[in-house]
Image (cartoon, rainbow, N blue to C red; front, side):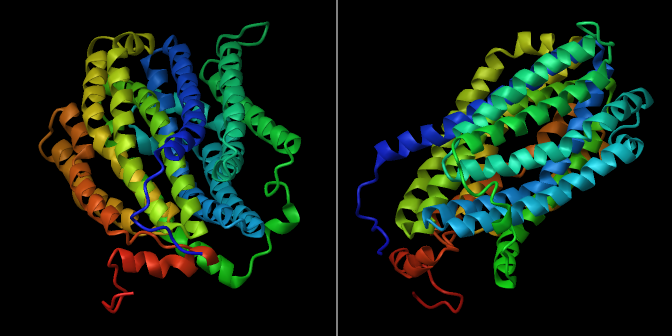
Length: 477
């Protein structure tokens, strides 16, 4: 097998068609999930801004859990996509078993913290006693949803990597509908049930998690999709396989955990502002999800369309696709941001913001809409590198800039100069333009193509010669 050369015409029809096939269902699923979160926030808004703020801070703890297991999702999808391209079924199954094992460990730890130490968690995120108490009652129930969410995420990551993107979409639709229905019934005490308030929202999240997992398993059994339920093959690991897996996952894990901790430190700053600002942040995070929903579709498309070709040994195709994906992503994100700005007025009011909290929320959306164009471009490039086998470069960049630039700027502005809240918020994105330039240079170098499959390794030398890439000793391949 020979890698395709740079002289071949790029297949735009295939590229756009398969982006749509992969990205649109993923984007729709995440858009539905975000819409469900918006509906939840609107329901909770009737209970007051303190409730909205408390649940928003609990969501930040969930985001920290997400950071803890996403490293394994990113590493797992790297192997899923490349083995899928190489048609290595055993490699996919073993990778899934290992990925699920690590993710479950993270989910169990965070679930135990939410159920057993909610006071400790809320004390970290805010110093407002009223908000702490609301958050504690929420965490004591929603902690049961964490393991369900982790298992569903692992299964969805595998299905998307093998181009079965509709099944996670079906699960997402069922989950969002169930969440809205259960929340309405349980928060307000409909159909003879007791009015549970914020505890009802937490229980609704747990029940929605059950529905999502059941729908995924139903379609897996119905379509007879292998890998997920082949339990006897999930644990056929040897030392070399685990070493290779962890070697690829380690930079991603470090990235997600350290960035998660960094974001937690930022959220602590944001959580110690006025109650109006805390409520605005909670609503902003929900609306931010609308933008990320569009981005996540491109992220999965990058992982599959690039990783699959690297695994199959078609490195030049992967390289050409990656370059175009980044710019398409930025264009789509710009469109999504304009859409959010256009409808922000009724949305912010419907989600319980008014007066000062509305002004802060509007300012945050405007700042984010500018920053997101560059931020999502950086994320798209990092996901592309990971799917091609280079898990380290983007991770090192993100960690370095978070701890040497973003956090010092945010803390100095807030505690040193007592800067206005919106300026402190804007500094959360101060590193993005610099990183974008560095990431673009790396993108055009082609050094991020690092296959793990036998087919990919066999043809990598020719690709590196075509792009003038040298080995560690500085010699031409």
